[in-house]
Each structure stands twice: as structure tokens, then as C-alpha cells.
Length: 167
Image (cartoon, rainbow, N blue to C red; front, side, top):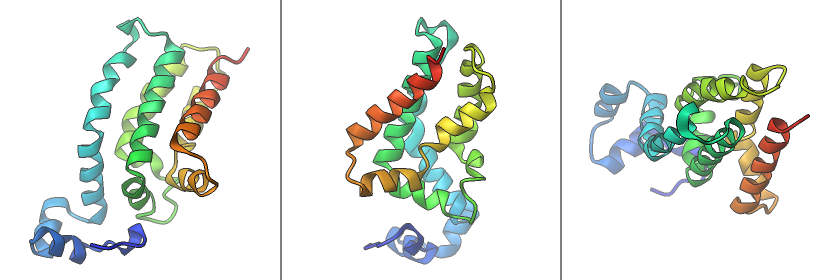
């Protein structure tokens, strides 16, 4: 299947490529968004295994747990940019509704909880802002500007550390 944009991928095309009827996809996933969510969940499985290091009793400091957690999410988003973008643009205003994405719904409370152990005035706002920095549109712009994935990861880590270690 040749695709020029995530929005070009239709349920008809997916069903054809998978060798099933479109109705089968809708019965299994409910909608295009449901299918995208299932794909994201499947691809996030390795990231969720890394979450054990983010427990308070892991021996890793709270700020470093957030740095590691957000780096894992960033790696996922960079390696699955088109999938993440397809899900994020599935509906208008996706950035405002990004909290409903599976990774956001799981990670935002964890980031907020860890931030709550730091002298940060508004952990809710900061957790949303740090996760929003990895929105597909922003990553696409950075890559289009010639930034490598390593440069993006280093910049994200520096941003997170500057927020977490502020005086």
C-alpha cells in the first residue's frame, strides 16, 4: 500500500491489504480510531515494560524517572511517527484531545505524580506541556527543519531537565 499522508489510509485500503472485509475491521475495532488505538497499544507494549524503572522504589531519582519516561515515549513517537500522526489527526482539535490517547492517559498522571515530588508550582500544567512537546506536528516540523532523532532526543532531555532542576 503506497501512502502519501496518514489521512490517505482508509478502512477499505486496510481491509484489502489484510485480506478481510471492511465490516470485519469495524466489528473488531469499532472505528478507524479504534484500529489506530489498537496498533498504538501493541507498539507501546515494550515501552510499558520500561515503566518499572519509574516506580518510586526503583532507586532512580524522581527527575531522572521523568527524563527516562519521556525519552521512551519520544523514541516510540519518533519510530512510529506516521502512526502517531494518524491517530493525533484522526479528529480536528486532536492536540486538545491528546489526553485521550492511550499513552497520554497512562503517562500524564504518572508524570504529574513524579512532578509533585519536585518544587514545581503547577504539576498538572507542566505534565501536559512536557507531553505536548512530543505531538506529531511538532516532531514533523523539527524533522522537516533537518533535526536528527538524536538531536531531538537531546533537546527534549535538556528541556525536561531544565524544568525539573529549576531553582
